[in-house]
Image (cartoon, rainbow, N blue to C red; front, side):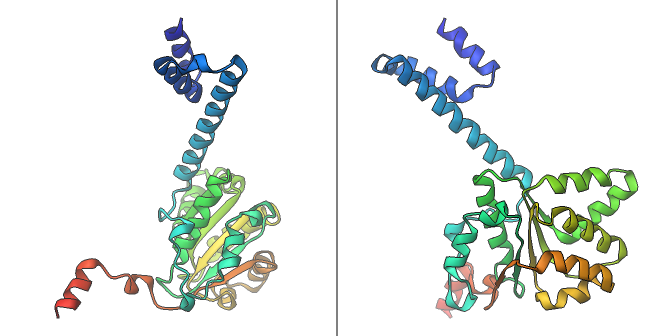
Length: 252
């Protein structure tokens, strides 16, 4: 009977309950619980298993650039990071409010890593997240317009609780990309959060977007009341030397 029950649990995808019940049978610990305690334990195990699988799916579909975490962020004074402010952002309440977050700074200072870490935390908290290199996203949307899947792609972006656009502003936007960005920001305004990283200061985004009317519309929705992090300091790639490089310096 137990084998039949275990088999049915697997078929019903009750993996948490399956593992708990199987362990209880193998160890004989089920006799030490009352019926309601044992049922509660199996339900709790199933809940935890489903939550963990949901988090894993969210992280997989987000396609982050880095495997990042809040614990590994370096709060060096030269980087201009307000630790308390960043910790509040990691609580993800800005996502509930549909607010934007803009992270700027020169190349290599850790913009993408912090964005990835925030995205990971959002996934852990149960939010849907999509992470894109901005230029690649625009290329994807351009192709989607050609094959008729553009509305599907835009709809997918709209469903995300947090949309991360990495490396924004590496090159000026042309008309199609400008209009795509306007549509994305318009769809998310007040409903979904946008996190943008850029080497270009926010004051220079107007020129990057181009066309006064469209730029005004985008920046009015995006920048107003947005949270900002302006990173400073040297490139983390330079300061984090490989062990073999340090050994060479010591020998010399």
